[in-house]
Image 1 (cartoon, rainbow, N blue to C red):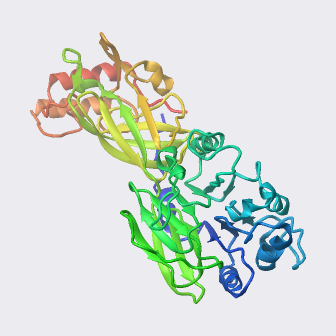
Image 2: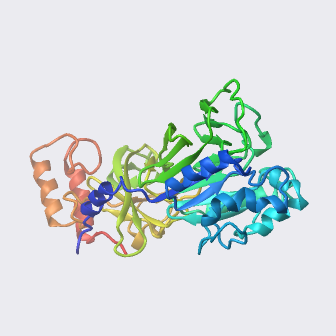
Image 3: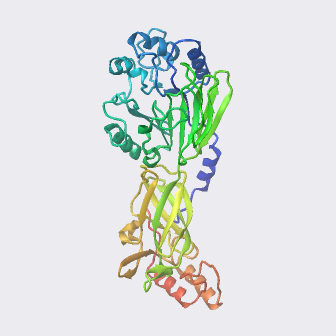
Length: 460
C-alpha cells in the first residue's frame, strides 16, 4: 500500500510567501469634520492606495445632520463609497468604505442620516464582512443601540455566535467607545473578545492614539482622524503607547505569519509599528500507544508523538504539525499556528514505532480549542484502525509495530525487532515497542501479532 508522503515542498513554498501582504487597509476615527485636518488625513490615506477603509465612528460632526453628512464624509472619501449618493464626484463600483456608528452619528433622528447615506451589510448598525484572510465585526457601542451592547444583549450574542463561526485567520472587532484607555474607558464594552475568538479590538472616541495590552490582548484607540486632539493623560496599567501631538491614520496589513498595525501622522511620521501573531489553536488529544499501555494500572508509559492537521479534501495536504508528549493517561496538548477556527481537519498521529492513525472524521477548532479522544472507541479512528487494550474500562490504542514507518506492519519490521532482541539491544529505539528501553520477546510478540493481522495505515 502507498505510504503518505508529507509535502515538504508545500511547506517550503509557504515559507517563501510569508513576506507578501494579503490585505492592506486603512483605519480612521473621529474624522468627520470638514476642514484642513480631515483633508490632510484623507490625503494620507489615499497615498497608501488601500483596498478599503474602516472607521471607528463619529463620521458626521457635530450632530449627525443630513445637511452635513456629505460635506463631512463624501467630500473626502467618495472614491471608496458605493453606492455614492453625494455631490463631490464619482463613487466606487463596489463599496470599500465600512464605518462604525459613533455618538455624534446618533444625535439626529436615531442615526437616520447615517443609515440612509451608507449601504452596509446586515442591519447596518452592526454587521460583519470578510476581506481576504480577515473577518471584520462592526458593532455599535452607543447607549442608544436598540439591541443593547453588553455581552448578554442581542448584539452581544450576535457577536459571540459570529466569532464562533469564523474560519478566517484574523478576526478584527471595531466600534466607537474604547473598553480600555487612559482617558475615559467605556466599561460596558469590555466583552470577552479574546475568549470569543477575536484577534484585536479597534476603537475611537478619545481623540488620541493609544495601544494597550490587557490580559495579553491588544486594544487600540485611534481618534485622530481630524476633528480635534485630546490630552493623553496618565497611562493606565496595560498602556504601551500614547500619542496625541498630530492627526493621522492607521495602515494595517495582514501577512501569512502576522498582522501588522502602523499609525502614521499626516506628516508621514511612523508613530507605532506593532505586530500581532496568529492565535495558537490548542488541541487536547488523548491516545494510547499499544505496547506502552498497562491494563493493570490503566496507565501507559509516556512518549512523544507528532500530530498533523490535514485538509479533509484532496490532495489531503498538511496544514500544520505539532510535536507533543502523551502522558501516563495518554493526554497531551498540541498547539498550531497555521490552523483556522471553524475549519475541518483530519487529526493524524505519528509515533516512532506505531501505525500512522487518522481521526474518523474532520474536526474543527472553536474559539481556538479542540478536544479529541482516540481511546474511547475504535470508531474514533478512520477505518476503525485501533486495537483494544483494555476491557474495564473499554479502551483502544494505536497499533504498535511499524518500526520502519512505511505504513505497514510486516516482515521487515519483524526482522528489525528480532535482530535487536537477539543482540540484547537497549535504549530509546524504534524496535522497543513497549517503552521499557529493552528489545526482547515482549516487543517481538507485538510486531508478530500485528504483522500476522496485516495491520496497515487506513486513510481517505
